[in-house]
Image (cartoon, rainbow, N blue to C red; front, side):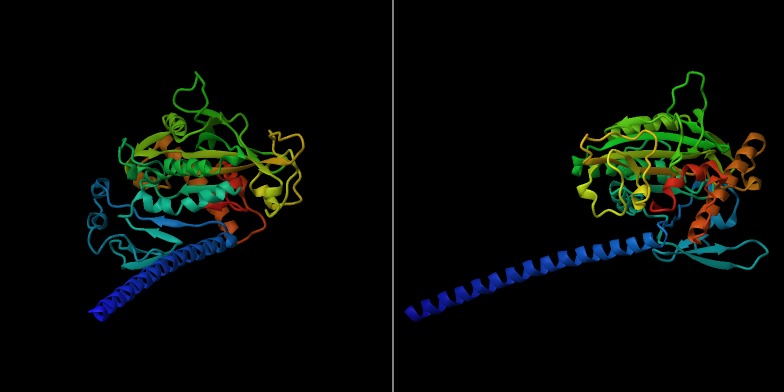
Length: 410
């Protein structure tokens, strides 16, 4: 009897030891799995860093779903977009196939490659997931530009602003409100730099700059006209531009909606609410950084000076833009500012299809010329030319600090 009890005790102890070993193995497996995901994310970040070093410009492609307006255009290809004759098809996350099926012409399939391709069913959250890492770069001192480019009616404003009609669904929010929300969340995690945030909202209409936040009793249908200049230290500025200090997403959204009410819009045959201007929302972050904490940063700046993100890459640069922010008397801290520019471009369009005439035709001409100037700038950057034609358009001149150099553009 005693021997049986002893054997039972040994079996119980062996079972407990096995259970303990199983638990230990499960914990080890979980830890290894976590390490794997961390390393996988690190590999992805290193890949993105390599992409930035090759040009700092990423191009993603989003296919919008068919809308009722498409079928009203009496285009048999668009009307059958749900079947095998669909115009655009996401082959995978990096490749898009476009069917060129015109009456009287042979069928041609063309493929294009991008860093990322979003299918028509992918939500706003999927697009924003690729924007988040750039916001971290913004807090690290880089200028960041996120812009939507495409033909009129392709869904740029929906991507950047969200739906035209108010929606309670958070999933419908555009990239601009999402980016500012994430921006303030990141700031709240590290408020040690005493961050200050201000926002400006302007539009470029017929190659003229209008301040959409300026309060002018004589201005009813548009903002106050401004100009863009390059200062002696190479900084792009808009003199007298209205900048509103904000401390929360709510304050931003109030200013944002205030500015949107003045944006130039007109209906065309292909878009009932076509934006006739480039909308540029600029969020500027100013932080106080100790010199000791930036010893490992590329480039240095003088104490007591304020510096742009791109200037941190040039140790020879000793000047500061107008409006330098004073720091503590002993000079142990400096002010660094970086800029986030969120751009909803006006759509390129064919006057024959849009049916525009008169003033609207003039608007189309200015829109297409400014987009061609943007293409020239991006082409010059990709080919590493010695001269980048930023000043060929108010649009590219205004975006000069956030496209190219050490900036990040998407």
